Length: 220
View 1 (tube, rainbow, N blue to C red):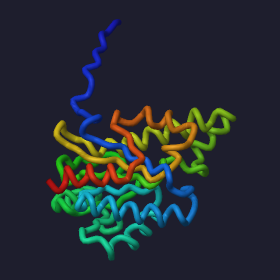
View 2: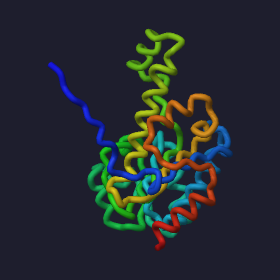
View 3: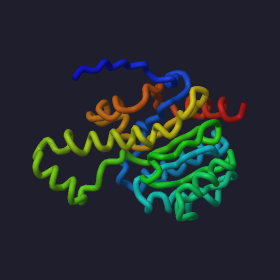
């Protein structure tokens, strides 16, 4: 049997409507200084966006720390994954208040569809590399050997990050910013493998450009 494949492209103008912000100057993501810098920048970006943020974290520890730090100082509501047991209810609460933020973990990297200005900023704390102690992936790594990072960990992280970034642009008129706080996405030698999996957004390391763009689309 034969078939004809046609690539009709994407209906979304990512280059005009979306920015990918990689914070190249941040500390090592395994340091305490990274956590502090991330909280400060997350506060700044959420303020510029007037809320309207899906903040994603690769661990509950990081999620809880961000909620504890930012809830008392932000003027917009934070809905935490800890607040509700049902994912659908959390998304409903987030979508119902345009100025709210949803702070969540990896289970929210996919399956979230909130079009319009209500979701104008998606942030991810770190490149979502799989856990080193995952038994299934551990067996695969052992089988692959020295090429395990390139053939297992890197593609999986790229797929997860692409899924998270995909929460931003849901309709042709959506505009916004995807921010990855992990400086490895801007500096590491393997960054191109991950970036190639993401939508073709304009890329920047300029925080001021991001703040101006967020203000232009959410405070018009």
